[in-house]
Amino acid sequence: MTVGDAPPAPAAFRRAVASMRPAEVRPEIELEDIPAPQRLAPYSAAIGASVYRDDDELAVGRLIVLFDPDGQRGWDGQFRLVAYVRADMEPEITEDPLLGPVAWSWLTESLDAHDAGYAAAGGTVTRAVSEGFGNKADDPVTTELELRASWSPLQEDLSGHVAAWCDLMCLAAGIPPLPPDVAALPPRRREDPEPFRT
Image (cartoon, rainbow, N blue to C red):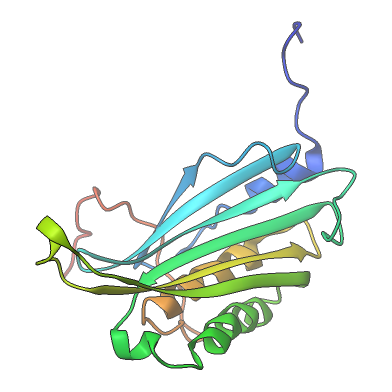
């Protein structure tokens, strides 16, 4: 190691980050590594995702893993996951007063379904309406749902948390989760050619 080199990340953090790269993901979801915020914890990593139907992007999100060997106040451990999901929604759905509790249940039920143990969960659900004015007056009105959440995983293996976050994104996009006995297809990049079909 030379002067100025950062020490290697702890093994626990490296194992957790490795577990965030699933071998299988739903065909509607495109995952990618993205830069992680550097000031929230000594060690961090992040993945981003988009949910597509045909060529339409229905939802986007990111999942950040934070690691502090000393823990932080409110974390309940050395790890913290921070999730963000944004999806376009029909105006009548965003007007439903139960949307907030239902969207939050999408997260908690997805975590439970994937046996992703967690503690100290918290977050917000926001409905946004965008209207154009002036030279944007002809733009259509759009309505969106945003969910921001954080929780502390109870184990280093984050694969169940990533799967739950992917399910949450699909639910926000209006795509139901896969039944337990149906396997997801291997991930495919959008620029990859269409697979051969018989």
